[in-house]
Length: 362
Image (cartoon, rainbow, N blue to C red; front, top):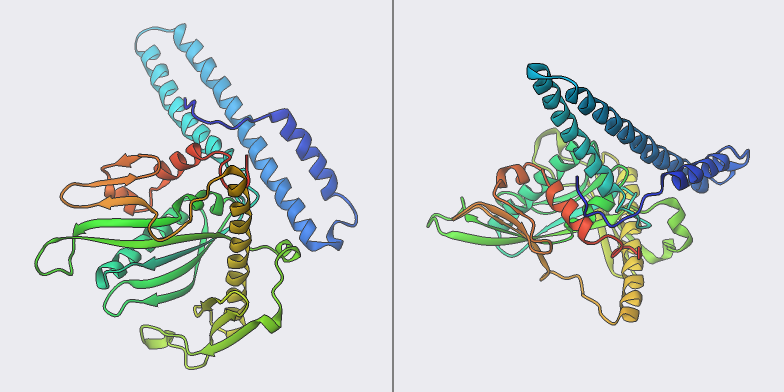
């Protein structure tokens, strides 16, 4: 059983908190303020999930203890069979406990939100574009395995293969809290299939992760119509029926900050505008988070700028196979499994190492 979690969990306190929030949820005027109502209902659902899961774990441990006691009272093949069952049950309980343990590290104010994930190819042309597409596949598979819904908001294809950049909405509770560990530069080392000389090549891609903006954020982040320049253009495509004949794609420029966002994957201009405004709101939220982090860092006396040079993970496919996270030193030789979306080994290690460090949790 893992003993590395540094977060405290008080089940009675959570149950008292749930009772209080449920009382708020029953207030007759709750839905007079929809933003507040949605927050209350989301908090109820989150607390119910945590409490139910914890009670299920308690019951599983109790059942496991009873099974071991029964095994102690038997002999021979029956005893061996009971011990085998107990070992399997223990493995299952430990996996669920680990998932709960990681979830308890996600206490930041934005951790429970959906996420906007962006990938950008680094220098290297075709090789970098292909690597960015590999990363997109990896994150889409990771999201699918966790039951998250995904939506590609915008994508810029490479000239030959791959993609130059892509923005994906990953919808689900705690998507941001989990994926924020992926922010930074990802490095690939391999024999490039696009290099006729067969030499080893290194390439990079940048991953950005934002918490999705919510209606209540407008209280602190204001977007004025006068500050926006909205351009429309024809969405690009690969040909066939998916090519748009009308100007459905939308580009929004936020004049005070110079932030530019685009969305082209919806069928209508109105839908693309709505998605682009969501991305803009999330990017402005990120700027506010970074501003607060800088203020906290000044108090602490240090600040590390998040930039292109901050490589977080290496994926080596030649001359040996290894994926290594340079922040936690977690590594595995099963590169195929990682590129198929099995990232929890790295995500969990990062979250345990950084309990209370990010998003204002201290």
